Image (tube, rainbow, N blue to C red):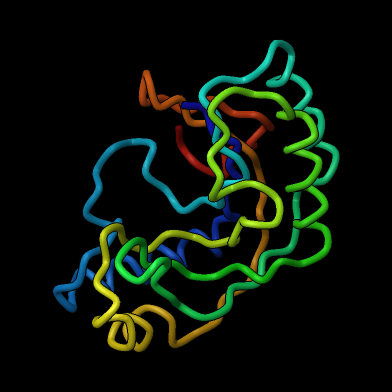
Length: 177
């Protein structure tokens, strides 16, 4: 599996990590407990089994041309009733346009994840996995009392086979790894 992800500017990343910490302190599931080096707040634009030839370079050029993009967070919600706890990201026009352009590059790629396809994609930053819908109000109060904003400052790709991250755009020290 290969992804196309946007990473947060440092202030926005700090706000999401603080929410992860508040969830953990409250005894709720939290991505803050995941210690893998690739674990950091991000917005997934696409997920496919593999990139078509030349796609990585085209994606890098595309993302470099538009980043940074404004990021506005909305409410905290549980997707699909008993799945990820997420902070919804407002689908600003610039973000929606980038998402569509990424999928134009990945047209015909094998194993397209339907959750990320245009028309089905719900932009979000994950806070916890396998979260119970019954705990969503508490989680919203603990994690999402504020509605932070910031920027998506860089792009990366996660390789599920090797569990590694590769930069699609220069990070200029925005984040390690």
